[in-house]
Image (cartoon, rainbow, N blue to C red; front, top):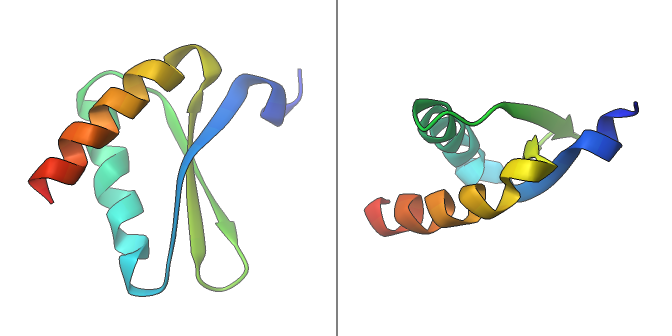
Length: 68
C-alpha cells in the first residue's frame, strides 16, 4: 500500500509558523493519533494522519488553534 493511500494531510505551515507543526504533532500523539511530518522545499512542513483518523484530527486542530 502506498503512503498516500493511508495518510491524509491535515495542515501545512511555512516559515516561522512551521514550528506549529511540531507542537501539533505532540498534541496529536498525546491524543492517540499516529502522525507523519513531511518537508517540502526548505520551509514548508506538512502533517499527515491516518485517513481513518482525519475527523478526529480536525476536532483536535480546532482545540489546538483555540489554545495557540
